Length: 247
Image (tube, rainbow, N blue to C red; front, side, top):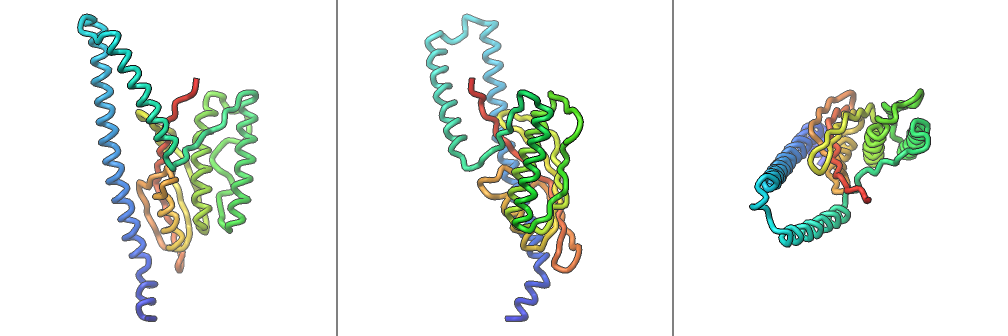
């Protein structure tokens, strides 16, 4: 029994790497399938748009007002069904706050108090996090970029909460990229580095595959820094579904 345990301990990193590669391959397969569905949807929308433009030119071939009315009702029904499905889905997407009176001051206060809460949460779980996150806390901030910064901060905050919950030893750094809008969602790339035992890192990677997580793992590299302590550098994507704004 001791020999089996010794062999498992000796080759734990290799086993962990095999599991990680399996998760990445599965994630890439899922991403490719989603990309195909999105492209198919975009192509259908493009065709419908071209048909609508054609009807503007050839009005005699356009559908009757009665048909348009029926189609509009069907569209409203499908929109409602989509909203119900979206709201019923287990994933909770970030809902950035809006700052209206003094946006620059309110944003900096929000960052300061949120970081303080994250530090307290990390201390309770004995997790080391960066002393400061990559967001401005001094000087005047351009009002036009505050919504972008707020969305990125919400993503970083959610990711930090997720990682702290795994009990990882240390979060070395976390750097969010610029949002990229797609048809009905947007992606935000995130570069992340964590340090911990092989079990901690594996548990953290598994958390990204949780149904409540909107993060997808794109790439990972793991290196041994000392006995039973590893550093993992990960490339993630935050996939955020767009919700219709209420009028």
